[in-house]
Amino acid sequence: MTVRDETVFFFFLPGLGFCYSIINGPTNATVLAGSEVRFNCTVSVGWVILIWLSNGNPVLTVINSQGAVETSDRFTSQNYTSSIGFTSELIIRNTQLSDSGKIECSTQQPSENSFAFLSVQVNGSLFIKNSTLTVKENKTVEIVCEALGWAPSPDITWMTNDSVIDKSRYVTQQSQGSNGLHNALSILTLTPMDTEILTCLADIEALPNPQNATVTVIFVTSTIGTSIPYIYHQSATRKSVYMVYLPITEQESGHQEKLHIPGPYLKVFLDQRAIGPAFSSWDGLFRILEEG
Image (cartoon, rainbow, N blue to C red; front, side):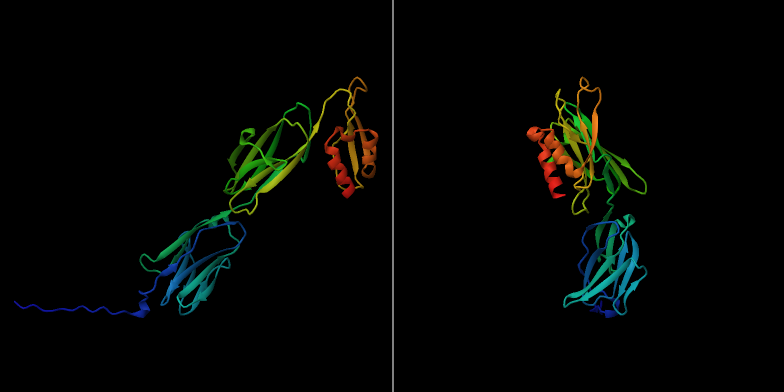
């Protein structure tokens, strides 16, 4: 019996590119629709080809011998070379909601793919129907804040005079809108004890700061015989005309008196009515008039 010693030799062919690998892959990103986002992928020396895919679809190819092959104005790249390898930076411009999903860097080698996830969010509208409300003593009102056209559905919170309102005091309902967007309706129940500024805030991860809408709730005492006026509309401009209501009892006149007073004379009028410190919000209003 003859035993032969067989030695197998393996040869490396640089052109086939089996010796390079992904050093650093892309990382997750969350952005607002319409903005720009960038992803980096670094491969070691000796690389041959790098392909970027969005949700499984090739969007940009970089070939060592000829550079980037771009097929869309929205998907472009910048390239950087260092001593450790080559970095391709994928740039996605004017991001769309449909871009959300998997962003992949591939070298067309087994187990040599690296991926991240892109979340594109939409900043919708937020509003409270009335910017000013007048509420009498011991009266309960509902303040409605509406968010339209968001993605994902925003987190709604309320504040009063810069203090957070407990969630038990309001109810928020979410609904599906059109084109993959979401709506939210938040109702705050309030029995005011003083004049206050209410703020409705809507927040999503991509926003640097929550979007907000405000309403001023003017508290009016219902004490019989009082002659304290209250303002229905106010402006910081001295040239404005202020509409002032005088809460006169039915026993006195049977109706509520309404006056139109030019801004420069409002403070004089209120002084003549001798309201002084009887209504705490006037001091702040006077400062607005003096600065306006």
